[in-house]
Image 1 (cartoon, rainbow, N blue to C red):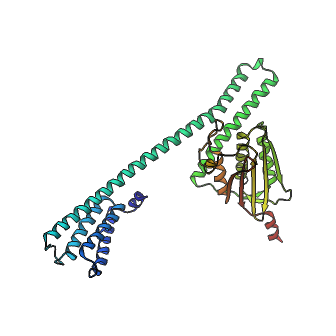
Image 2: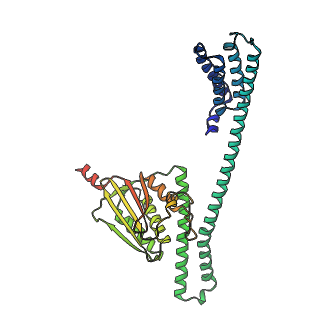
Length: 360
């Protein structure tokens, strides 16, 4: 943060502001010189130089230290308004003042440099860690479906005559599933890139929430999941003006995440409720839930929970949070007391009820 402050000002401005600050403080001290001794003024000026050293480069600070010593000598050390010093003690005091001010400036600058190097090393370490995380995630998540596609295609090309109709169907089905998985990972990466660029804007249109949820569930069930999915929506729920694509992705990632990380016997519940102009979507399961210490990190980019199945890029839930917030909503995660986890999404949106009222 200090570096950002420094970079904001050119060297010329740093010299100017340093000298002006010394003159300002010296002027205030001169006004109250009848109440404070010149030795107290030295401490005040020294503190001022120390503050300047925290924010500016070394040369402007040394200039401020020299200027403060000259001002202290000329205006405060007897005899006043001359650079002459009456006593040996004051001469030594003046010399020590300049030495201390200069050393203080140099040490503060060195400390800032050490902190800067430490921060750069930390940033580099974090970058390497993030790179390794991305590489490990993508190497598995992209290579696995690609390997499945290559293997199935190879069997179709080289052993076509020996394959039964059922074998061919299974291989084509395997290619389709692997292609869908590959496409999903590429979509996640593209969506995260869009979120980080800050250019993503929701394209709002009237959405039938029932239709959206049933379409998403159908896509997930086509993956051959074992969990039972219950949908609880009031048929009279109004239309909401939202970005349908974003909403589908949010619901898909949450339900798919529950299907991947819960046991085959678990139940996934999807509930959609209209509270005036707020769409609330609840997705919960009766699985093992999340480790309490990790709940605050589940929406972090590339974060993968401990003791979970291998695979996954750690992008799904971060995209959920990003898309939800892009639509002006919020998402909350909690563990259920009966076991399992619950994601609650709240999005403020115009409803068809409001539209009908306006038309009336």
